[in-house]
Image 1 (cartoon, rainbow, N blue to C red):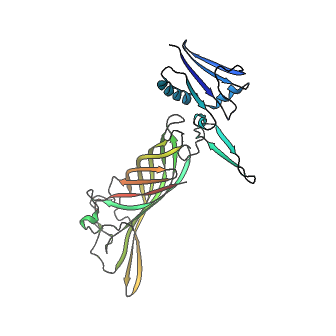
Image 2: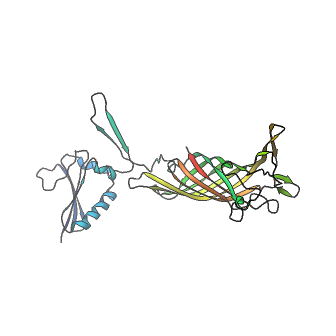
Image 3: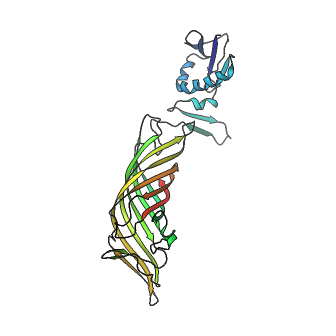
Length: 329
């Protein structure tokens, strides 16, 4: 049975479809084989040229859905100023005006996402800076040391993680591919604030944690690293090509730039502070896994060191865990 698909497209009221009208100034008939045709008509000469603004692949997808439900009936798909926005090509920008009061005119601009320029943080193959703010802890045999009352247990809120870095995003695949590679450089500071009256002390045989000092108020170990992170990211978008959220996962390798301990204690009614630099038998190289989930310029991150904080047999075997938020420019 002969199938007819009558597709009428109008733009801002200038192009309106009709089938069987007496006066036609501009029309296009597209034949598919011998039994299927698509007819496009316009009341104005040259009106059909306006169709170049639309993505026919998206339109035909919807037409196919309508035809499945039509069951041999003629099918009409009306596209006007409001419903036609979703069919515009990626490079099209639509500016619409509406009447307001005599003293005010308001214009609304609806810019479709463009994959040619990609102004979003992921779309651009460019460098972007970021700041990590979070907390540190470490695991010993997959448990937190304070669970076994170890002398190197940490204060949760006092053990802070800060990192400053810059990443570049490289799109993998075509212009609309959601897959990216991210690589960059960062400097991070790990503050390990010890719980109770404990402190870290370097001895000839390793890093020791001596008996608690009653006069000790605060004690921490700070380590600074230069890191090279690399991740694979997926940027998800909705049907209108607008960003929703992204996922990223990968790893990092870092080199220790410096480290020191700092204690705060009270003696003879006065508060004193002491700071001592040293390597404390810390591993010079660190490496691990990292992941992110975010929306726009804010993300949640987690990092886990696969190697120990201290050199083997020179200190406890601790795997550093950091987590928090990432702010991107």
